[in-house]
Length: 334
Ligand SMILES: Nc1ncnc2c1ncn2[C@@H]1O[C@H](COP(=O)(O)OP(=O)(O)O)[C@@H](O)[C@H]1O
Ligand SMILES: [Mg+2]
Image (cartoon, rainbow, N blue to C red; front, side):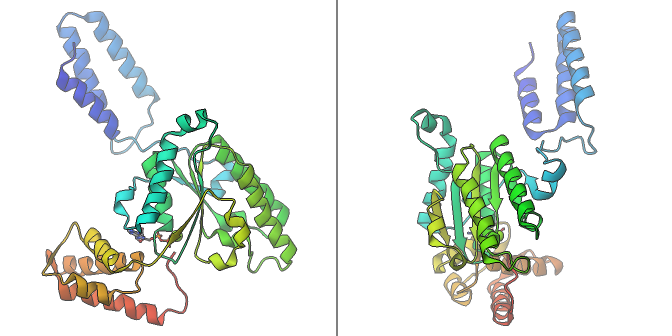
């Protein structure tokens, strides 16, 4: 029999996606069996290893890339696929926002229990809020927590000047939604309702948004559909009811600012931080801007071979972000 250590090593290398190590351990196990006089078992193991090797895709670093279901053909231009590892615990959120997300994750995890009772787990959500407050990150987090791929819908490719074409592409996306389970993210979804620069006819614009909403309403798949917008005022309140949840994202409060700073600094030291003072300086900055300020401060320290930050270092970068905000004509955060 294989030793406990061999079994553990085998499982671990599989979990890590380390094919090289996986085969090495498997070969050791075959050799071990041969030594014990289990010639037939050893042969069978070697044959299994050989055929597995023949099927696996060669890789340069010996590690298997995460098997991503890559959209093919026309879909490849419309959806960007990835397997995010993001977790809810890395987000700083309003309590109610966190509860909404937790409920969705729980309902998704107990999908079959809920459907067995003739009910539908929540899975269509609208995220509303200022840039840099975590809407895109939320899409990654939900995919990460549920262990399913994230498909970001490329609105630039979806929206063409031909209305019929746009509708046909939208249909293809909804076909994908029902055939491959995943988190599907329509970012800046309000653009569907306002095809700036393309069409002037308001009636036509409404039609695209309406067909999206109809498809959304009819969709009975087990994928999660997320729409996000920075401009809720561009949307009709009537459409909010097509979603299971409308979740609002706001700028961080003082305690949240401190949480974001501490979290983003977790891998780097800061000496004598005056958190309350830093929070005051950072008031009005988004989570993304806070993140950038911390990253800039760390980069600056690293460049100067310093292994910790001072309060002044961070203060300077936060002030710089505030100044940038004042001068911003267009908000380029996304
Ligand atoms: N609520 C949050 N908690 C922690 N970090 C955040 C949060 N929101 C944004 N960030 C940081 O800012 C980056 C950009 O945020 P993003 O999700 O793209 O914002 P949005 O889509 O709302 O414009 C994230 O990748 C993350 O590093
Ligand atoms: Mg975004």
